[in-house]
Image 1 (cartoon, rainbow over the protein chains, first blue to last red):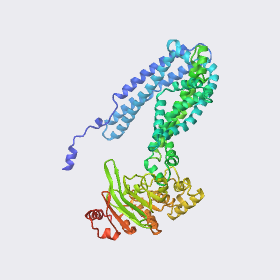
Image 2: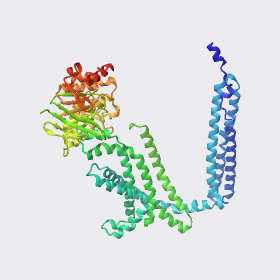
Image 3: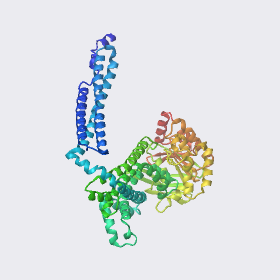
Image 4: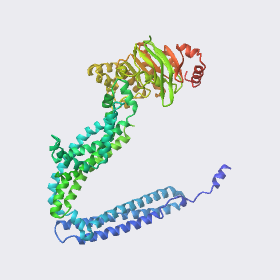
Length: 367
Length: 247
């Protein structure tokens, strides 16, 4: 009787249980085709816009051809989605081939999604090209002029050394200053209250005031005060000092969050062995905290590196200032593009490194 | 006067009074066991003795020296009173040897070589000499707890506090830890331990104290407490332990 009940259960037809992407696959094909038309049309415009002769002309034509052909590649997953949908439907009609039908349907769905995503990439890149070409390629001429880039490249890159020097010196100082502030903010007991208050006030103020303002105040304010040593700082060292003050406040909070994240039982264990508050911090808590905060620390350092461009306001000849000199002499902003590229080149490896550290921390032993 | 004398100590967290005028004495070379239900104040008592918690009232005297109250050099006191925690609390960023030698070297109790020699000797005694350069997370819970005991011993404490040191261990790892405590008892180490291992408490203790609601409700030699408890509360507690198959 049980068997009979089971047999009599109304089963869905095999075809109904195969999720063929009936809408998604054709839609993906349509979207891919449209984005291809857009890309090829833009490539044709680029070909026509290329000057008649010179190396630059051939570069542009090559970009047009390669870009147009590459855009056509999105048609492949789109047609594959359609093809596999058909196979899935055919297999679903045969009772014994439902597993095969499902696999085909799943592949079709995935191919359709790949086609749709790739189309988006094609559209974005094409829009970028359109932007550069707009108004008789005014943007390209202003920001990506090959002549202006090659004429300014050397001096701007040399001036970028100043940015690197400011960044490295400030980072070294920030590591120390931030830790001093963090430890002061965590000073224990009633006796530590004035220190805690001072550190809190400092951190609040320096996190609130924009770095450009601090740089301005240090660069122009300190010389007025006529403090021996401090007032005769070169603009570069004034910038290092200003960035250390600002980023010390950020990094202090990073350190503090790291110290707070160390379980109190570690402190209890160290104190129970007779270690003082300071020695517990030094030998047990801070070494563990520093390991944990390395990724956020790197993030703050990347911010600091970019803020080195702000030293322009006190007259330091850094990459951006040098680029501005070229820009005003040549009425062309391509030298600024060089600055942007230089920052990208030094920042991306660091962000990748920080990501990797984060990933390792997430799967690591400090759980 | 006893080696350790605790007189009427009180401790509250927020509005909740955990220790309510507790009295206790420990003689030199004596092993005293604290038993009682969770929340009865065993751990708090131990943490108060080595000043990880500040007491609200009463006093604690170690070898004639008052060690509670304002102005006591707690860092100095803790060199004499070691504690081992339920969760070992080894320092994860240091190898086993450094865990043990950190306090003696940093506090100037001995030079690096001397400290390391003593640490190795202690590690040999507990059979973990080959783990000297391992990081704690490479060790089993039982091994970590043995290292934690050795870490406390490295400071040559005069009193050792053990706070439920086997509660976080898998059952098969309990014996290796308890055997070390047994050895220490035979060597004459003065110990005050909170435990749920009643069989062990009965074997190793000179005196058993049953804590209830922040006071010592009943105390005496293990035969008396486990064999013929007088208080109803003690009987009820032990009855529950027996029913749980733990005694």
